[in-house]
Length: 359
Image (cartoon, rainbow, N blue to C red):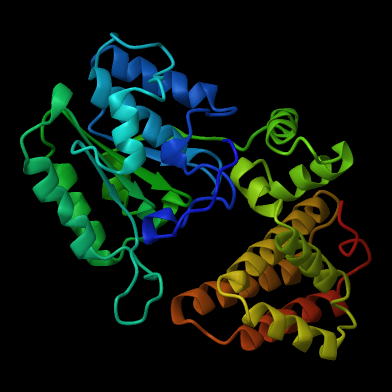
């Protein structure tokens, strides 16, 4: 990824990290050699699956890999005519068409903007998934292949999932479906069984630090190291955290847990009001809060078991549910944050020493 100017943001651009290229414009896939090699072997031997289920945490490179596969198939087809790493030059006509969103052989399905509310839809609806039938029914374009990317499949509602299942049951020839998933366990077992899994792993710390040195050359080594620890092996998460406001949210989440036994209520309300004034901030804060809790619980589980640990697990489950409900129902941020603080405080007041210090 290289820095670039921010353009007008449409629904399909919401996964662009501020100041960096969108996955469809990215030609570097860091630290996912195993998954890339597996995909390349299947494609270049002429025996690719009808559908890949590309899994892994958010920001880890699933979309970047999907666009890489799409470029190769639309440029060379399922054969060994192209490079072993599935690369296609940035100035190739296929790359340029995909970058501009104009290639007729590629369909990208995502949540859109609800025209009635102006907000991003909370689910990927059935009418979006039904576009697959018309797309796969079209005459193949140049190279004879059609590729569809669903980003992310986790967000489909029940009707959309059933429509996708029908598409998987009647696969057309010379077509590939790439389902991106942060949480494949949410998908119907029948969908998972009709796809080959392509699992992407969190980046090792040394690889993530090397990538951050390239993307954030002006940062101090210590600051990049702290950023890598917060990112959980995700380059996308790290680049989002590079935003100063986002780093403040991460520290707010950590401070809230550290002070949970004796919470500062006025400060909590001030934090909730500040988060409520910025669109999308509540979910970012919720991600940091649940991740911080999970990290502490994992560390404590190595030295402790029993009721104390169970209370923290219950707190994590409650906080996770609070933010998921807030996202789905557009709930007021103060209610979500205060309710989450109450659950964490209940665990903190009865917790044996040790969990407060992050390990």
